[in-house]
Image (cartoon, rainbow, N blue to C red; front, side, top):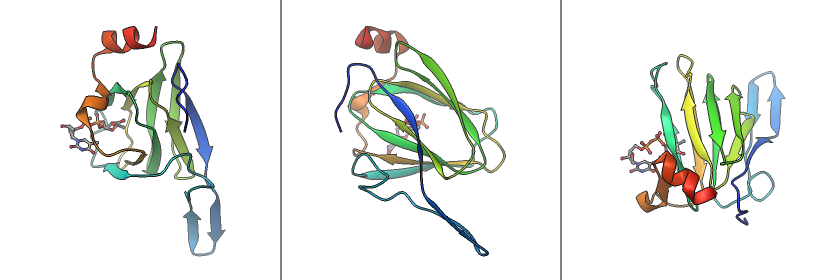
Length: 137
Ligand code: T46
């Protein structure tokens, strides 16, 4: 996937198969996933007042999914700030490199599954907001 000069955030909608047994929601590359998944991690057992994120990535693409419950993601690409409430596994929030993100307002028993395009690499993080702003302007 190409990087643009400003980071980009968009909401994906995954297909769901619903029958009397419940719902099956599918994220399947290359149809629904814009990158190859190299890592999956899960945020769970989250206190309501917890704040996760507070950083941007240089090269990493990610998709955040509310596997259960709900939470709010605020995003900032240096040009605009947006707020996204994720409350269903059928919605995946695609975040490209160059986006500052903070995740908060976790409902009871919420969990956030993250699909990531790269292996963990601390040098890919920008954890200082002023440094992030300098990197995008
Ligand atoms: C993101 C949001 C949504 C690892 O060793 N391996 C990993 O794969 C990850 C994700 C983290 N870590 C280590 C790095 C830190 O020492 O785990 C510790 C906690 O990570 P962090 O404070 O970055 O966690 P969050 O929840 O603030 O951020 C995470 C991701 O790091 C980040 O990429 O976008 O979830």
